[in-house]
Length: 304
Image: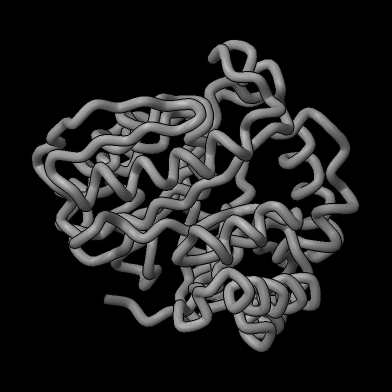
């Protein structure tokens, strides 16, 4: 199983770059950034974070977990993502989702929240068209694009792989019909196993039975000598992040506790079929790097 980190926060570029470089040395396989336009906690644009990571690393994969394409015009998204894939040397995975937990950010972008799923589906089609054809055009329900050339093309032929995130039936159908991978979010091992089985069935039903869907999961992590204290801290950090009580979610879904607790939880996800585990360290300001080092040690990652 590949282990990655979702990083961000209010950190300047130099510190972000240094953190990314150390994460690569510690043995993590990938670095990710999340996306919102307006969120209860401050959040930096993910593509800018990943560009910073790209300039300070050599081998790790880079990815969005997850980007909300419905909030932007897909031609602009296609250009930005192609540029990032180009400058990173073809290391990008484009994780996408529909969002909707915070309707005000959709209103602020002039996008009806009820259209987010349909807009995301069409955006995926636009992205693939603009990445694969040159010139390319598109005429759909929401977007009409004349023949245009986006240059440079992505470093990866056909563009970065698109992984679909979410927990709902609609997200599973989207992953099966349109995605290259699936990113579960805050799921138990059994919940993840069940969703991947359903995606496999839906892929066959969609006529894509020969297409293998990569299995990924994103969750939060915190290493501490005391599991009860770790759970309490995890609930506090998540609650501040989401603006709601998150104590039960921390206990049920997160990888939290002693090094042994965290290893056991990771093993459970590996047995459930998770191929790429994306961990977001739950750390107070200034303590993220310490948590990254503790996670690398707890999971016995091979230094590189």
